[in-house]
Amino acid sequence: MEALIRKLLSELGEDPERDGLRQTATRVSKSLRFLTKGYQEDPAKIINGAVYASHSQEMVLVKDIDFFSLCEHHLLPFYGRCHLAYIPDKKIIGLSRMARVVEVFARRLQLQERLTQQIAETIQTHLQPLGVAVVMEAHHLCMMMRGVEKQRSRAVTSAMLGSFQTNQASRQEFLSLTQTTLANL
Image (cartoon, rainbow, N blue to C red; front, top):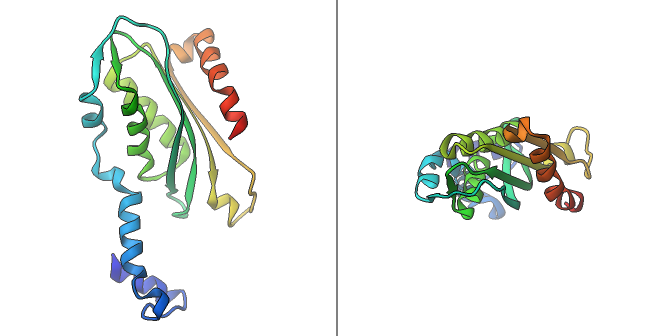
């Protein structure tokens, strides 16, 4: 990867051997490996170690899960917050594992729409809850730094599965619990 990055620097008109760039290929390589470490992580392994029996059927919500990802179209960052909820059916998951599921998928080259759906489907598959809801709101540097150059725009995506899709009361409860956060992002 370092050779490719040095070649990229040369193609941009830079000298990869000048003082400020001598270690750039190494730093960028390490950075990209960290930012895409989700490819080496298995969501099933993260979840399976923290699933517990429960009789609760009340919503479990973790709000304001910060995330950072890279847009697969331009390799530029997008970042924001994720709100993730589910309604248990005999099983619950450790709360920190919910944030780790977000992290696994965010640390891949992504589209926000797919990221939102992957998180919801993973929780649905592994917990088989009555419903799953995910809302993500993000700033995309590919829209802020280039192209349309709209610095204050935010993309909002959602995925509603099970009772969040079919039961208006569950959906509304989730949206009302996350509303104040979304307004303040």
